[in-house]
Amino acid sequence: MKSFEERLTSLEEVTEKLKAGKVSLEEALSLFEQGMKLSRGLEKELSYKHKLSVRVWRHRQNRMINVLRMKKDRGGKIENLLKL
Image 1 (cartoon, one colour):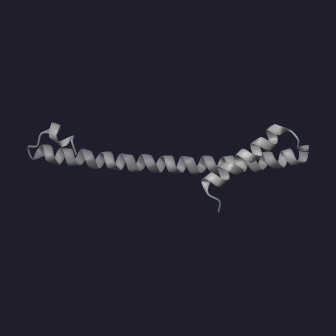
Image 2: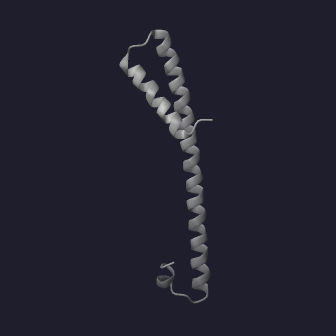
Image 3: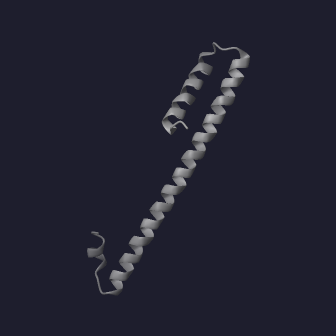
């Protein structure tokens, strides 16, 4: 399977060919379908990676909040804890 960057490059090449307008109608339709397939796949991958990064960020924030709560419950000062 091609990497994200390779598929993006392929999409850019398809776009340039279509912009140039030097292809037959049949070839243009084929390129359009190919471009749409590439575009959907890239968008799906970006959406998945975005959701994953948000989950990781939330998990880290929740861990930090729990650490701050535990330290505060033990008498720690919040100002000092934020330097973690």
